[in-house]
Length: 74
Image (cartoon, rainbow, N blue to C red):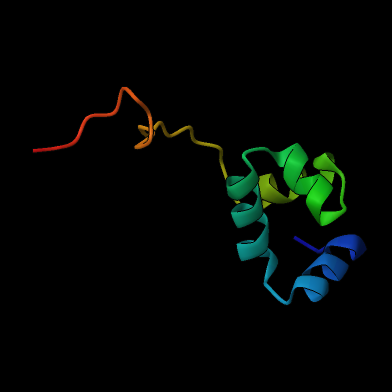
């Protein structure tokens, strides 16, 4: 996919390739909207970029180790 001008700027500002920056930011913040806001692009731009580059969303549940319901193994 060609890179929209704004995404080229984002990549240059962060010094990280888009194929690392975008998925890492979405995963860290938990949503495309939050990632788009942080990166200064629209959610639609981010969504299209992810789709055209073969990324899919997957939900993963993990137990909060600090939860009062969490139990120690052993």
